[in-house]
Length: 245
Image (cartoon, rainbow, N blue to C red; front, top):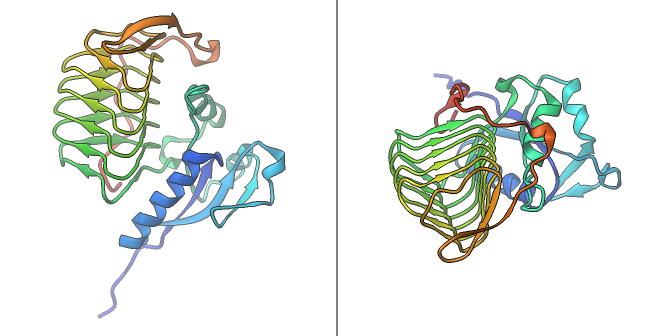
């Protein structure tokens, strides 16, 4: 009897920084369990990187080249805390069909069957998601984060390592939660807010604000680029996939 096996899907990583390299290692961990992705390399707009090799993979050229081909999947791996708007900017600029974006989940992450994960999202090692949690599109979840029942993370959220969310927490589009942030149950964090590392959030945080400390408090407004746009009050949930899709 011949067993039919699916061919690994070609995958290109957008960006070539630290998070992009972490994603590469996550893809390799997935492939070690069962071959799923064929890593083609990175694309990055830094001209000095073209033709170089990073993490054993080539830098193929500028980001725009992914628009010239439709036979590989893409994952956007940018978003430092000093420029966490970049992921949404790149996705808007590329204007690719949602189906082109890969969802990458490390095999050691523990996601309940009731978890929904959007396309373009990357979840690194050791993440725990307990029950009925929604994780939107193009979300980044760093190692060791814990999300509990009924949490909701909108598109483009960045969650750094060791973050803990109580039940029923809602995180708005593009918000950035620094390493070790703790959020009390049922709190709301507004779109594009930034919460500094180690903060303990006991109150709702409005959109476009920077909060730090224990307990967390506002220290400034966040200047959100005009091309990011104001968040919609109601977002239609679409393009949602489950783990392993």
